[in-house]
Length: 247
Figure 1 (cartoon, rainbow, N blue to C red):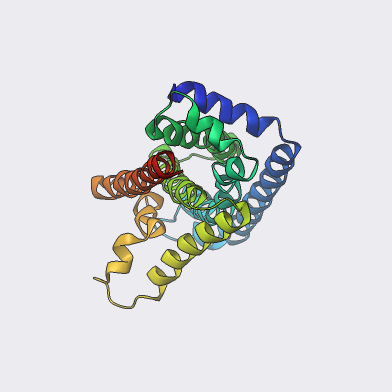
Figure 2: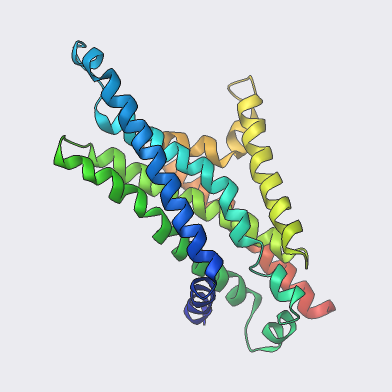
């Protein structure tokens, strides 16, 4: 049932003209950032060549590119998650979904994986752009894979937050603003915390992404993303369960 709901979510996404417009706009933005980073690298390449151990193109172009995409996704994902459940409520189709022989677990995970697969397909455009650089130079494949894994885990955490906020309201715009406020708030609290042992560093998804961005595969960071996503998914499941019982 989860797979069927995920496929339903994917079909509904690709059926909307706005989705194709967003895909085209984002690929243009990704390409613009990629070319800007590449141009900056080519400008400083003569200075880098004088260093004993100069940083490669993967560190100077690919890693900052993934970091930029992580920030863009923080702004983008709430726009997609706002419609997952809030729009169903507004269109009065959520009652039909609740009346089906589906548990809250099926509904939440079906919508979660449906959107996550869509966003994963969107993200694949980034490494495809970066791998065009193999035509002229060597790439650090380990660093690229680390960034891609971190970006997927980070996106999953964004989707989980947005899905929970979408389950709380019947207004998609309110769900988007709420999810964006939570994600941006955690990010700002992280960068504003002066102490190294501040708890804000621990609860910020973007902070945990930085190790992946540097090429460090830390099991603690991976566990954080899994637990962070699981908490918000469980909250969304609980919310839907309460809706089924209390109406």
